[in-house]
Image 1 (spheres, rainbow, N blue to C red):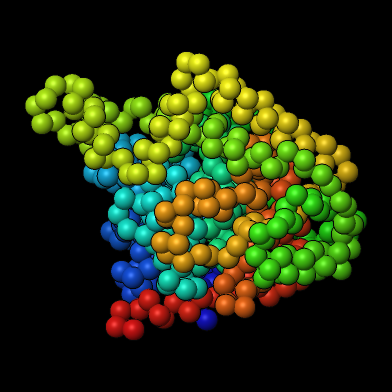
Image 2: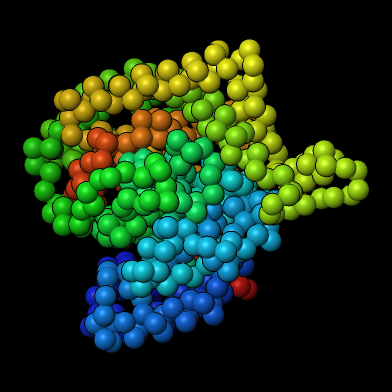
Length: 493
């Protein structure tokens, strides 16, 4: 196996023993990126000089045994939604195409503090609005398992980069499934933490009450390790929680005997792809074989989740994206027609079609005469969805579901039908509305060789249970060891 295909925790052991250096490892990842990314297109920006400098610093740290963490010297990459000091941060949009932040997001600060090596910034749907990464203003990312299919979204670049071994770990964001859905479609692990567990400071806002950062990796252990290092209270983010941060890795013992796992009938619906249905049900049998107790649970308001989400999220987006006016930073189109013309032209040329669609939906639902009927009502139903989970967790420890109703779909297949695209997140949205943690990991493949994702949902701030359950399943199966045939992306192939 190529060194870049090893898990981060395995690489950390080799670095600590001096079997490899961070510079050698970083050079290997940069070589992989150079070899395949011109076709895969997971990265918007690659930072070789900065990465090699950080690798050399990590090697010194390892040599002196000074403040070494499990991520010291490990090459990671960031969704291009995190502010990075001195490095372009586009959010997948023309309106921020040349924006260079003067500061690092808290997540970036913590990764750097842990000694991680930042390889670059990853492609995404513009302002995280999408489920396929086709809404990127620059180019679509391809799925490493099949170049004719999408990698999911909005963290599609993050999932594809991990899957194709272009980084050891990536950091994505999840507003309605944007970590878990692409993780499922690309055959990797994606963890969406409890809302507020990881700071949002410096993470460009889409929907402030839903957005949450989290890790993506090739195994559950890497996600657990990364979460321990990026989580925690941040005075710069008023929504971050005063909550204890665990050594999440220490809970991964493979033992789920007696754990009660809830099976919600609302997630096994008509329209679920038969290969997804089969893989998930076989995964549930594995969990039962490991000693877990299966419990039927009800989440009766699930059917309203997509409607609620696309009112709450678009309303918050309408407010958050008002700041892109061509005055303070970002794109400015000023053709001499006055202030209102400058606003109109800047936003018209700077925003893509999907972002405009969601701004208009949100502005409408917040407007006088419609607020009560739409946004207020959606907020009330959101509370009912949250209560559904609270009631379900009275009889179970975690809930298991499919992550996505279908495997990766073909590029362009859903672009003309926004509603069908929105339904890609039908199994992930409720988790964000309730603010609870969720994780997706591989549980099988379709007959066409496309990955299928299994999702665990947990109680508020109970990341330990979903990580335990996910790790136990992972260790009992071989799905996480599968790697996509990335040679098809190599130059000249």
